[in-house]
Each structure stands twice: as C-alpha cells, then as structure tokens.
Image (cartoon, rainbow, N blue to C red; front, side, top):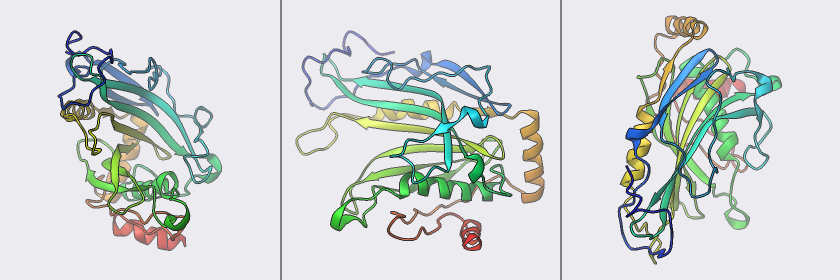
Length: 301
C-alpha cells in the first residue's frame, strides 16, 4: 500500500531527482466482471487514483450485455482512417505514481477495456473472429486503419507516426484466440521510438473483439531527456492486472468455439506477426502475420 505521508499527491518540490515512486497496491484491487456477448470477462483493478480527478475512469454495469450494434459508437475522426469501425468503452482506470516528499507525480498508468466491431455495412463476409486465421486478418485491417494512416508532414511524409506490432505473443491460456503486442509512437527518425501502447486482444463473438490497452505515461525526465525514475512499480502493477484477466465463455460462444476447433484444429494465433508497412497512405499495406493473412489479402485484391 502506498505510504501517503512519504508519497503524497502534493507537488511542492517538483524535482526530477532519481527515485522509486509509489502507486496503488494490487493487493487491495477489486474484482471486476463484465458481461459481453453472453461471456464473462473478469479481472482485478485498483480503484481510480488519477492526478486529474475522474479522468480515465469508466465503469459499466456488470449485468448489462454490451454487444449490440446500437450500443457501439463511432471512433473520433482523428483516430481512424475511415468510418468502418465501431467501439464502446467497457472499463477504464488511471493510476498515478508519486515520488517521495512532495516531489510530484513521476508517471501514470492508464488501463482501458473496449469492445470493437465493424459497422453493419462494413462487416467482413464469411469471417468469424473466433477463427485464429480470420482474426489475424481482422487485426491487420484494424491496426492499419487505427495506426497505419498517420504520418509526418512535408519531406518526412514517408515516416509513420507509429511502428508495430512489436513483441508479439500468441497466448494459450485463453479459451479463444488471443495475442498481446506493442505499438510504438514513432518520431521523425527511424530509431525514435517511445511510449508504446501495450495491447491485448481477443474475440468475444463472430463479429466483435475486446481490446485491452495499457499506456505508461513517463513524466519525470532529466536534462538529457532520459527517464528520471524507476518505472518498475508501474510495470509490476500492469503485469498483475494483465495476469488477472480471465474469460468464461457463454453457451453460444462455447458452441461456436468448439466448431472452430473441430475445423481448424487449434485456436492458437500465429507465432510471429511482422511489423506492418506504415504509413498506408504512402505505400500499399504489406501483410505481416502468418502466410494465411498474406494469402487472404492477395485474394481480396
């Protein structure tokens, strides 16, 4: 538990001397249960402790099933390359980490859970997200539309604003296809990568998937721009929240998953998903992922 005397939220000194900050303790985290498409998504998360009151906090009723086309809204125009996708926030928290003796907030960890699907008129025909090969195709389109269209201006227009997916991991502990990876923010230089989005994705039906996102906002830096504190406590909290995520399938989803396993033989996604060719508004997108993804894109052309 955070020592509120030594690590208060007051920021009187506001120095960037190296320290090990403290944030919320996971052992006091509450249990959260979300009903999505007849399935239960469960995890543990500490209560909100943001620097900015309720910023980042989102709660949904544990009894309301959120899968319905009229429940999902549009992405903001500055996020998506098109209007093909819909989303709704299921849960959100922001946790601040403070340095000792009123030295200020050193960083924050944002945690969000969202439901994502295609608009009715743009649904993929004949693709079930519960099939791992099909879900790879869905992710390719989603990542291209969300991250791939953003580039720098002028002579550096060929430079993307993002780079990913990186550090791809296909998971077997979930009852549906699932993967975690990072998408980095990229500067105007090829090696200028920072502050990645840590993503964990998995389908909850034939037409919808859940995106879990962690973002570490590292605030305290020295004069050279290097991080001026130990970010280990933030990473430890992120790992504990991530490791607490579980999913219990409803009867209809379980039947659909059993059918996919019988036909495909496995729910495991590809072992490697190569970084995508971004920006997509300069060069035609090139498929990463498995050979099935690349073949599917060639077939769509």
